[in-house]
Length: 343
Ligand code: NIG
Image (cartoon, rainbow, N blue to C red):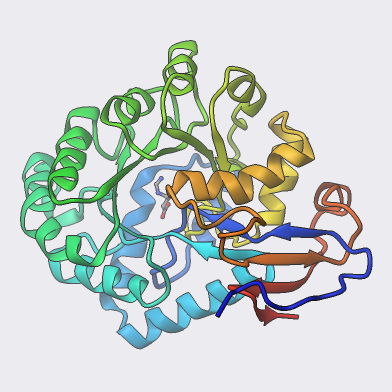
């Protein structure tokens, strides 16, 4: 049957394509509220906090992890998200990474293997040995359950050579490429992602002119995660500069317990407009079509014949209210493939 065979009267309310959240770390256990409170008191965000979540996640049962994912995907749906990418990355050993990819696969067909999220404690001082494990046994266990491979290119995580090795191994295993880059400072991530033809490079908080130029001439999407910059008390990326240079941009939530504990795409849109120089239309487009482009999905992110009938109805006449009425639950109804999933 056709997906778009129902007629609904939205009674003057705003209808938008469902949001496509192309960056989330939903499979985890535990809480890092204390770390967040310390950060608000002035302590900087560091990649090392990931280990706290790794310990809790390794110790959690499948039931606990599934319940946590269900809670978060429920929230995401109510914020208007109709498709999510989900990453592994809080296991960092072969059995747990495989388990996280399997659990994520119960919720989405855009699962990303992120074994190269951080060097786990048992490999302290032996990062290259850990990279060999990621590229070898861990990739072999996870690749059949994934569409994508990702790595965290940052001081305190993995350098550009290590990320290159991971992404090249993933490509050889048939996976598409994504990269965390330029989050905590300038670095080589963006240019590496472009060089390797990655679908997306995510964060992009610190972009040099050369980074913007490289992105503009490429098919790599720059995905901004402004809820992260909010929660880590960083500067926001200059999206205006990237868009004016011709870069394709996306907005995503980066839901995770450390740097961005929110599922709200409306919040990301509000930040993008208030603090990143995007217009409301650009921000809404980046949250829907931009996310689809970052996932190389031509069936999502638009209200058009041939696309999945994923739509949201706002309790508002215009998406301006995402910014004008920040923090208010504006999403009244959500449809996935033509079926009501909320409202
Ligand atoms: O995208 N940057 C790397 N990973 C996550 C943070 C994960 C964490 O702090 O637990 C991010 O911000």
